[in-house]
Image (cartoon, rainbow over all chains, first blue to last red):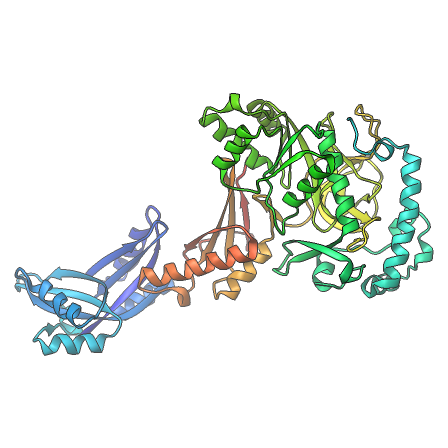
Length: 143
Length: 431
């Protein structure tokens, strides 16, 4: 239902983002999904990777500030309206989405949506009741 | 009118010395008898009021520093009954506790005289319109020059700082002739006047600029752009405010109001008094104030004194423009800022004590940026939470410093260290 997302503080300066990614590639860590929230001074790089614990360790050793958050991973059919349906359920239940990002799985006709909400359990219960499926962490990490 | 008080400003140096001797002796006796803090300090140094017979004995007295003001805060150095005091002014202290200076009506009156001397030296008469664009309030700049202008009988415009367009409108409509503000704000005003195409509509003839460092190049620019003669003025809240010393038409140093404040130059490391003409830290002793007559107060300004016959006719000792500080105080937009104050706020807000202050001047306005190394506790996966913390920090800095600062979060260990010691201040201003 949830997966571990790693957030990394990145200064908004040339070359800073690539340094983070090179730190991970040096440890042979594979990215599953990512998104960046940016302000004029800094960005927050959010990552889903195949080996989260190892990634956090590698980043800490390179003096990056990170935080790990459990986020919901919703599994959807890759068809028009699927995401809208999920968001409508949440909106009707007055659940705010902090942010989200989506990616498509190779050749499975599936899309995954990473959802950050205040209360995972509450959101999950609302979605499950309406028949929305979740990916588990194994699905995502070994994808 | 060439002098406001010629009997003092042009007195023979021996006359001034006689006045100083008598006033110093009286002041020392009074504070020793009425202020336990002074008594304790003098007892510790083994000096009694009887040891002080003239200005030549000044060196026997203990120094006072900002630390004393903090320790004695708020009333510990007060030398007059609180019921006789009519006003306070305040400036920042080194670690957050502010310095509060008290004034009796007598103190305000002598301060007004000091500022009136400065205004008259800049050509003021009762026909003039004095435009005071220093801040009014706890800061001494606005009220100080305001009082001096009243004393001369000028029409006084208490503009305070900010709202540049309104400043210029009043300047044009009411025909301001003498502008009083910080030199950087004068430059900003000059530029805006130029942009508005109003250079021909202003009637300024003089400017009295102080509360921050400025150069001869800046003086030349201001004189040219505003069509004025630009005068420097010196002062500090602890001593009284602006008007401790002022420039005359010679523009070659500031005459110290020696009948009220005795200057000394000391070696900042040893505390030893240096001979006249040598560069060192400026120390002042107040000999006429009732409420807050600081004795041997270390200003931390590095400066040179010279006694020479001035072509303006004044005999008062002259001080050169301060050449720097013997501590780490910064003057930003005319406000005193200590790095330690910023550190206090950062740590109080749970941020890392690893920071760097970047001061710059953009369009004649000082900018203050505080770079702070992010700690894991301060980090979050949402922008909103981090920005909330940044904003909270910026607000606390503003209330501590009195000026706004831009907060920029940077990665841990990214602030440059030289020989293991972080460089705390980068001052990029070209003055």
